[in-house]
Length: 608
Ligand code: M6R
Image 1 (spheres, protein in one colour):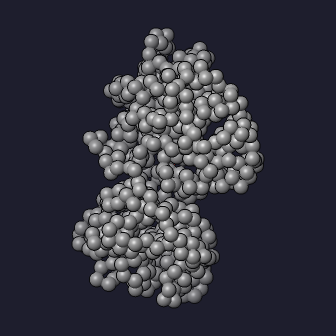
Image 2: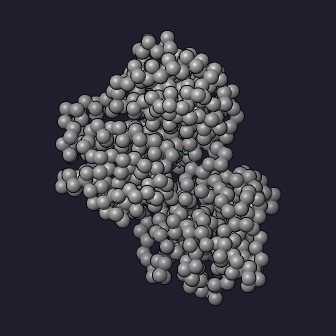
Image 3: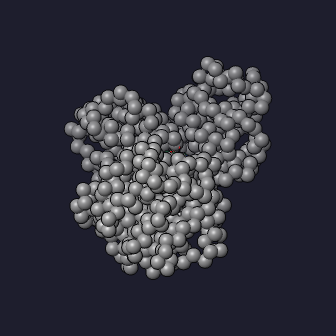
């Protein structure tokens, strides 16, 4: 939700800002802008549309300078317009800033400022911050920022320039992510690491409430009480090629094809001699693990569906009472986590506002909290007791694909580990399952090789307006994920139901124009799902079946069959999700949609 970037150093700041904004564009893409210090002035350029539109404007104006801040917007307060685009300035042009987050008390602050004669140029909550800062400043930037923090309610990551202060920009963060970067003679800030990778791997994460002054080769940081803090520099182990498309037309397709490799890296070093070993990462002693009675798994979107898949095996392999919830619901209900609870918070980005709030709630109630995330330095990773990393590498496409694969792999390892430590899963069973889990990367790759037949199928159905996705048991969350992928990137309406629920309502939607995508691997529920297929077929809906190699029966009942290799019935989600990702991708491509940046979406939802 909005991407911000800042730079000071010897390079041409507009070039660094544009590169950074392109790498942050997945966070929002309805308008973009930058402010650059040029010949003692703060020059502001902004444009509605994508970063490419801003780039054209920057080239036309021949903007140059060695310090600047930039922004790519996902609109919250105020429509999509040049006036509402960031950066925003105070009315005297002394301060300029970019913001990611929401100021909750902006109406009150705006009224106070207007009453004292301030004229606003935009409808945003952000302009309130810069107008307020200009009035709090008395020659000492730190003092003004400390006063500003006291006045603001809500969430913010801010990068700020003061016309009087050359070669330094300032950052604040509360509730929205911000990472600082440093290199010889250069300083950076960004909402996310990929924006910094072309220039530096030396980063420092700002903690809640911290203030930073970023200068050439120097980062100074203070707490929200104004106490100076020494920041540890972390070295990022992602490499720049991981953030590039290579020969693929879209990041999403590249990321779908990386899934075999993601499984290998997520499993690597965690499976030894037929057993799962997470002791070096989690360090849980048997007494702690034995003390848990409940397991709460909380997440949003695709991460929530990964949690629903894991719920099935956690219930089967452990004796814990497992509850899975959407973070925006969990945080407002009487969820009753306590010292008997292991709370597992699943988030690709580790920055989703609702998931962070849910974690804080569970922790305050006494739960032991574990993050399952792809981003090592994320807010979630820094706030929990323990972290289980996905190791999927950066995911740039807005639609989550390879991180779903990494999430289910990490959660399965967790389920096996808990099963062993709680003695609810035998060594022989663990061994048997791991044998097959280690074959999954290859089987995912076999599934990917069948892309052409999925593209052909998408060609036949690309004009449809509605789809129904059905699955039972462990295939139900895969139906949900398949429908979400189709909705978010191809804008085709898709509903997913537990197959047994169809006749309780959604069957009324069925007719020849509504295809039913049924996930029906060869498992213990196969015959039940086959009956549901008959019910849909009787209403003349085309049946698209996602079935197992060697299942000849299904061909008699379906209009088209997509196949995946056989695997153990508890492991089918690793394979069945892949054709659904490819189906959504090719549907979107055939319909001419913007695949990596679907309308209205942002990859990281850092506001409630
Ligand atoms: O970063 P997170 O995993 O917490 O994000 C959760 C959702 O916002 C995310 O999965 C979203 O649903 C994606 N658009 C799915 O493709």
